[in-house]
Image (cartoon, one colour):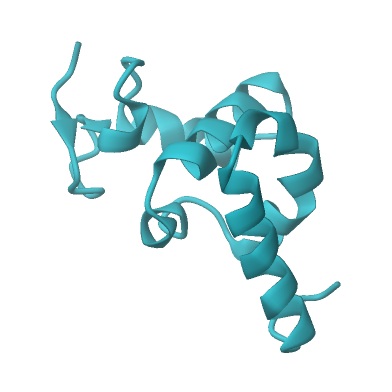
Length: 98
């Protein structure tokens, strides 16, 4: 397996939040930039569950998280409440379309 990293510019390494899967940052970015589907949902869900919120924004936009949040709920565990709080707060502040 590739070494883990917290440096999200090291595209040939594995991001720390994919500790159990040999997927490089470049491969993750390619899947997340692709069309919606099972592979994208799986990796997005893992990222939302395991990554620091500031690192999530290096890969996806808040509108993407908002659109996928309910669909990904079963994958997020207790982190679902954090993401719902964040997205709903941004919506109520007018920073994110509802």
